[in-house]
Length: 70
Image (cartoon, rainbow, N blue to C red; front, top):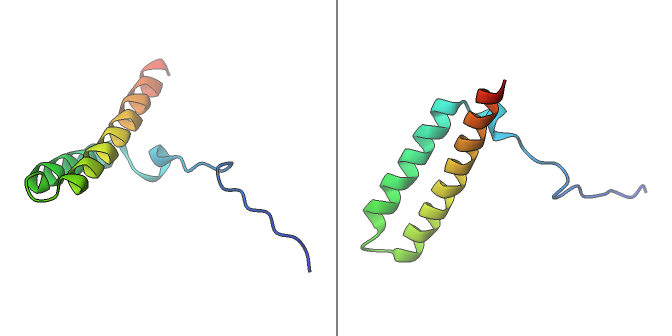
């Protein structure tokens, strides 16, 4: 039996290739809206959604920077 090696952390998914810029912006907008809607009932879920939205916004900004340099 051969050994199998896990590549967790070594292989990164490029979301820019999977999702287009418009789709990323729509996903960001949906996370922000959902976080706002649940902010009064479940603050931990709201915080998590804001965090995910912030990560998506960073991806969008980096993608726009890359597109501007080319």
